[in-house]
Length: 276
Image (tube, rainbow, N blue to C red; front, side, top):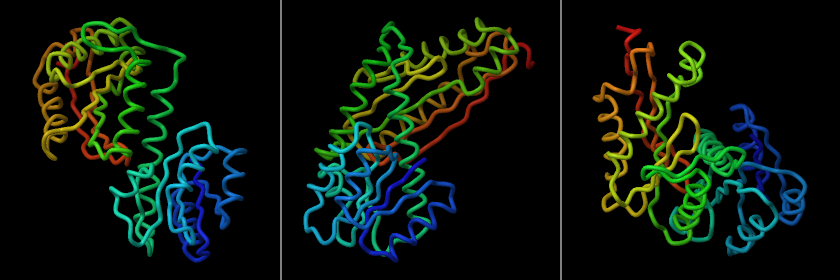
């Protein structure tokens, strides 16, 4: 993953670069904003850490960054005074308080990698999945997903995405055949469609993966409770793993928008007939 650090403070930029490189990220630093914007037209970066100083307003820089790239980079505002909500409203994904600590920088970089990878995956239109049974197509879900990221930032609307995946799909397919693997995914989808609220949007985003968009929750705990409810219910049903399957491994992940923070992750293992 490539990260661009835009900061006139050389010590700060060097510290961020050293910590991120030690964590395995490829980092470029640039002191001048105009040079950085020219670089963004030539190279693709997944994450951008920037300090707008000496400019008083960060929003023009954010807009310039967005215009300079055809992708969706994860933008982190380096600041001493701005709040996360203020950063959201000007189009940033998150903030990093100065003076920066190495652990915080690495955490934001991992969040950037998570969200950037998810944005690319959702936008990948090489294979779509048809709308059926209350589940919308991947292409339609992607449009709502991108809108939710934008609205979460611009209007401060709380949004989350829940990813539910059959993690060992390839192993099931290899050991028991494609029918058995697809059977596990389809049974999981049936239960998800029954569990979701009417206001929840669910889409099939991969052969093994479904996603739910949770927007404007009534309480701060509602998204965590929803993810826990999905995990608990999937753990209780007995028909996901057929007699032809040894084991089905499912993950339920809750990701906050637009920060990309992984707020909850549940692992469920369902034994099939071959495992008994």
